[in-house]
Structure formats: structure tokens, C-alpha cells
Image (cartoon, rainbow, N blue to C red; front, side, top):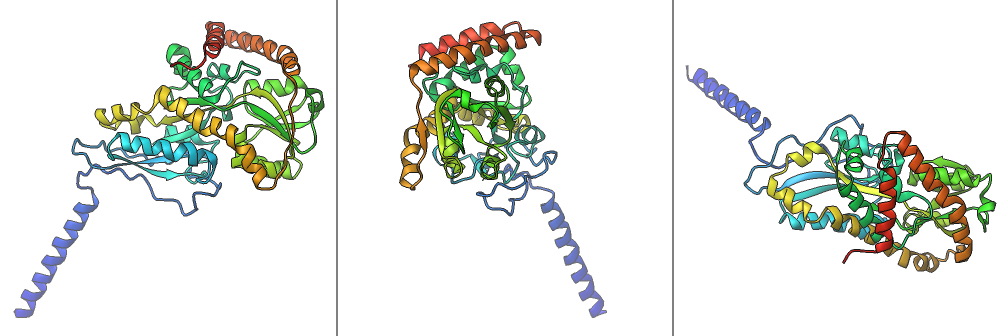
Length: 388
């Protein structure tokens, strides 16, 4: 009888502990969102991503209790790149500070969560909550916003260009609608892309027949108008393809030349301000809508025009100012060809203005009747300079 009583007590304890564990596993109503498992590859790698169809975004909205909300951030660029050091991590820090520590990011740099090419769809699917985007990886995704990438626009700085494209995004519903699959927190541009090659190119005539990595949209049209072959590929793939001769060169800015060590495989730089690139930071809609209203307001305080200018200035303008000296200090020499202002003006007249008109005609043929108004407004804002 005594042994039976002991067995009954043991059985009861096991049942109680089992039920408690099951209840704990089902969630206790806490508001911490931790979507998915950290990848096993280091942040500096550029390997394959998690499947773009796997949704790991937290579905539980935070309560008003002020608990930490953990969110996933995805970025193509490795953590040691100019982008991550001077813009990516500092901006995420600003968001965390603006929310008084209620938001905390799990930071996946170097394509460890999703590849650069898959980011927009992966973000939409919920693989990440917030992500860095290179919009010209996806031709025709936001064609009206590509106005800012037209060749030979009156560039002054990436900060100015970024201010202009964000203002256009806010002023023209036809532009913002094209971004609507996700929620932009910033839209920004680079400094001008120059031509980095494995063989010397001193004029645009020398580009004919070369295989040049370029971006989608107007930059591809420019390369083809000059007589070269445009090749679309993500930035991390340029090094190997230039090294093996698949590419003769790439249109690149100083940030990309430095971050991806392209100066090791390309010796010649033709400093013609061909065009700029367009980038952004965007939220998954469910992730954003799941945040408390006060947290959304705090994040918005360091987003929009502020964040667009921040990224243009810190990711690109800072690199333009400092990277040439840093490359030289590493013992690498770039043979830099700087055409005269007269030569650049001649090329702008030959290849710039006609492509502006081609862009307007193409957009109007697709039903965008405000294309010319968008182009005129972009030029007007660029000529006005940075707002005070």
C-alpha cells in the first residue's frame, strides 16, 4: 500500500510539471519579439540567404508595458564595410535611442539573412522586419523614382540627391505608390558612379564593346547608348567577375570601390559623373503595424527626410571625401583620368539630355502622365540645393 501511494505522488508530480512546461511553451503574453534563429555564418560572409518565402516576422504586437521589442534587420553589406560602419549601425543605434531602448535590433549584415537581390521580396514575406534595399537590382519596380538616377543630372552631393528623391516621394503619389509593397523609412542616393576598369579608358569612345557592370533602368540605357554591354549583377559579385575577365569594368562609386575592395582588381578610374544609385530602408508592413503608436512616432522622428539625408551623407559623401586617401595608404594606386568640364558637358549633351527625353516618353507610354512634371521638379530641387 505504501509503495502504491509513493507511485501515485510521483505520477502526480510528473503530470503537474508536464502541464506547466506545455503552458510555458505556448507563450506567456510577453511582448518580446524574437523572429527566428540566428544564422550560423558570420556577419562578414556573403553567402546564401534564408528562403524568401519563410516568414519569421513576429506577429505579436507589443503591449504598453515598455518591454523590449526585438526586430530583425537585414543588410547586403558586411559589418566591416563603409556602409555599415558609417551609416548602418549608427542609424540603427539612433532608432534604439529614439525609442528609449524599447526597440532592439538583431543585426544581420553581409547577406546572412537574405541576399541583396532577394531583399525586397524577402522583406515583403517577413524574413526581415527592416532592411537595406538597392532599388536598381529590380528594374521597373519603382521606375518613376528612377528619375534621380538619370545620367548627367546636376549632381552636387549624395545628401542633396537624397533630400530631393525623398521630397519627390512625398510630393507625387504616383511615386510613393510604386514603393507600397513595403513601407519606406528612407530613400537615398549615392555620389556619382565613375568607371573602374581593368584596362585604361580615357574617353567614352574607349568604352565601346566593353562589358560593364551597371545598374538597372537609366544607367543600363546609358551604357548601351555609349556602345558598351551592360551587365546586371549584385555588388558583391563584381570583384570575382572583374578578376576573371567576365567584366572589363564596373560603374561604381567610392563607397563601393572601397567596401568591396574593387581597387584590387580595377586599376583605372575614369572620373565622369555618369549617374547615381538609388537605395532605401524599408519596413515589412506587418512588422510596422505591430508596433505601438508611440514607438512608431519615435522611429519616424529619425526616418523620412532626416534618414534619407543621413544615409546619403554618411554612407556616400563621407566615402567620397576620405576613401581615395585610404586606398593610397594601403599601397594601391589608381590611375585616375579626370576629363575637363567642357568634355563632361559635351558628353552630357550627347548622352544625358536625350536619355532624359527617352525616360519621359517611356513613362508616358506606360500611363504615367506626370513623368515630365517629375523630371522638371527633380531638376528644380537639385538646382535649389540643400534646404536649410
